[in-house]
Length: 148
Image (cartoon, rainbow, N blue to C red; front, side, top):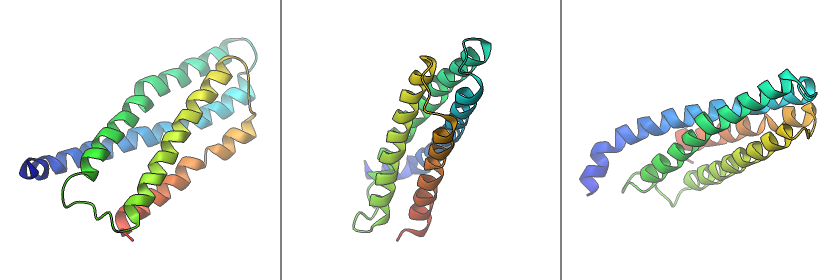
């Protein structure tokens, strides 16, 4: 069984990287859409409906499947024997950051629903929250590459 895991490991890792890229693209873009929606699309009319459609499709067709793929492939990688040294700090930091990124994904889904109902937290808040995935990505990449 271990030999099978090691044989498919590079393919699972490649799939994981592709899924991460897709998920991160959505996590970077969706809060930016929220800014535009809050500042230019809150009136009843075409801009608001267009933003709601874009936000919904981004979440449903790109971000959610990518997040699920990240979790499945990430767990497969994490539990491949001999790959992760759980006595080090980096896998725990990465895991905490991925959990935080998953929370952020949920926060985005909630904010999309609020905006669709015509409720807004304001463009400034969305601009600030847009930095969260960047900070988490920096911690994750440093953890995986440096392995402290």
